[in-house]
Amino acid sequence: MKFSIKPSEPSKLDADVLILYVWEDGLISYNQFPDSLNSVIKEAAEREDFKGREKQYLVISTRGLISSYKLLLCGIGKKEEYDISRLYQSLAQSVKKSEEYKPVKIAIAVHDDWLKLFEAKRCVQSIIETVRLSTYLFDKYKGDEEKKNRRPIEEVYIAVSPPKIAQAEEGVDAGTIIADAVCFARDLVNEPAEVTSPQYLADTAIDIAKNSDGQIKVKILEIEEMKKLGMNAFLGVAKGSHKPPKFIHLSYKPSRPAKKIILIGKGITFDTGGLSLKGSEHMETMKQDMAGGAAVLAIFSQITSLSVKAEVIGIIAACENMPGGNALKPGDILKAMNGKTIEVLNTDAEGRLTLADAISYASLKDKPDEIIDIATLCGACVVALGTDITGMWGNDEKLLGNIEKYARLSGEHIWRMPLFKDYMDLMKSSIADIKNVQMGRYGGAITGALFLSEFVEKIPWVHLDIAGPAYTEKDSPLIPHGGTGFGVRLLLEYIVSL
Ligand code: BES
Ligand code: ZN
Ligand code: ZN
Image (cartoon, rainbow, N blue to C red; front, side):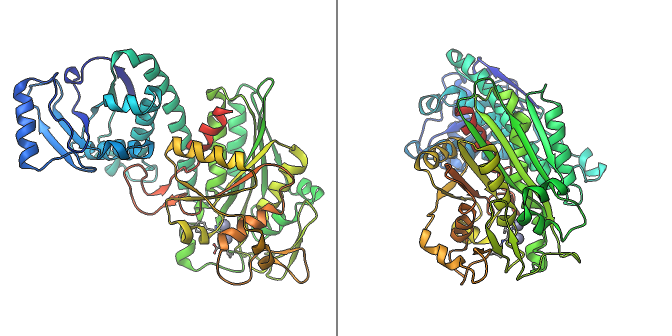
């Protein structure tokens, strides 16, 4: 898909569909259009009661009155309520609507008011991201017949007022890099778990390092080294599968970095629940349980293109959670790398066990300034916040505030949750330091986060529980069915800001 910035008036662009955006009760008459076309628009708007409300569309055949074949007016609601997240939504909705007319070329006219609300770079970046993400397809396993009948959008013109062209071009570069990263994460999650084994994730990390001109280093720890380091919590989860676990460690170090941050992604390549076996309905989508790891790999796949100034380390403790003959049993006790003992009462709460060792390793060996983990950790988080919002916990006000800021900027939804220490009592074990599941049924996402906090040394830390937003079973304009790539945009924006 090719994107080009056009300083010319939208009326001169020869697209199959030209998209214009209209505020609720806003103007639908354009100086650059001939009066005859403005009259057609006016009449159609009256007949179809088009007022510019959100998700209202008006489609006009231009009959040669301007260069584009069709005109799509897209309602974007009230100006006072507009924000970045609405910008992403309205762009995605308009692209999806335009696809109904099978265009090969579309033109998007950047609303002049958008340039007052957001920076030009941000507007254009959002356009690139949205067009790429809303038209994303994972069809490598589909037959040729279906693929032959598709007519994808090949070219996108973006009409911007001339003084903003340079900034707009920067937006194209940033948007392309970020969209590439999100699609990279989506592809990894969408692949069947039989493909994305721990070995596959390790090979992906090795490839990323190989293609980085030496800017990224990778090390893969094997079982023997993990044993030496005392990663028994991670090893405990892994031993139910015949596929060997891989502890993936990526590092990117620019010259004189001001900060060292670690991104840890949960990397359960398939979560059956282990001996505490999941029901089939809950297991169906568990190839998604490495979505946090996929986000970390995706970030590293683009980190060198974004001139990131901080030192960034990526860690993924990758394994399967299977109920094999050697599997971990409820009642077993594991000693994590930081010396704490864990009574495992439910083998389906495995993510926290693998993360216990990943976080211990990060804290004790790499000694960073900040740790951010991203994990499909708890079904309870989905109960609390629904499928579209990520839960966030942490121990440092400044880091929490920053993550909120960049989430807002990237249009990804997160919500701060309490690290309520009193609930730690629910995790008390009579024979070990801590249990891996709580007593009782309520507040499960909080106790999940509290469990992880036991393995963080005195370092600013944030935990993102993406169990809801990592994967979707319904198509929405910005996110088609499957892996969503959640977190990639937010975390890339954050590390670029450092
Ligand atoms: N991978 C799951 C959490 C999950 C649920 C991710 C839904 C994505 C969508 C995790 O390993 C798990 O099974 N958690 C248990 C924890 C419980 C046993 C304390 C859960 O949520 O039921
Ligand atoms: Zn589980
Ligand atoms: Zn899991």
